[in-house]
Length: 336
Image (cartoon, rainbow, N blue to C red; front, side, top):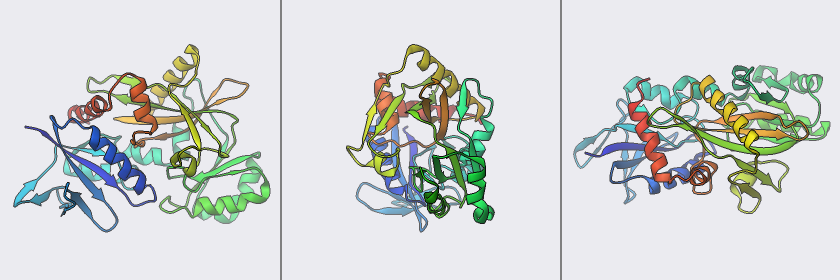
């Protein structure tokens, strides 16, 4: 009998469009001999299963089931490909924990923590060989004082971004002080990000993104890194999703020593944050020092054919079908 997989997509933020594309690619790569895959859309208005003919079936939230042709359908596992809230911030994971449904991502606590960039950096303080840019975390109650708090503590240029959010939405690189207030307002007001802002001193260097996952045998597997070179000021939303603006090199041109050092750092991050499934770590290699600077961690990384993780899986010599099978099977044996 096939395993029934709920492929979770959609969401409550501007990342929903990316989530839908990611889920479509994942579904196209699933091992249909082993799994029955049901795309489940989660929106502010409704939760529903969308079948191949475009018919919708409302999800019963008491047990995450639906009725089709008079038969109740339940799931063995949820494959979460929902970027942003509620699929990446721990809300959906907490719900699944309460009803006893296994899932492919980090647990509720880790998901909530890692959506908060400032708190994540605090937890990762002391990871060997890892550096972090000097930063200021700003809450809504500090909005009136935010400008002064930043200028008192940090040196230009700055990266100003929502403390909780993805796809670089609401992010600005500030090179002159007269642009700071507008950048702060943009980050504070970014939809669905909690009105918290993280401001960091800019690190000059090469930018990389690298995936890691725990397979069904319980082993941590570090994927090859991707180097990101963009014609934009930084790797913003347009650079990420507009063809031609960014060059992505997988595997990245790193020395053996740099690869090994990055692998040690990423493994320690995965363990320190108690991650599950697949995650992606973004970092800078600073010019002049050769130090790796942590940027952020993404616990529901994009999964379109052009996304970093699928690129890295292919560079690793693995098929996406086998990769997604590993994630599902790891979730099914996970006893947490």
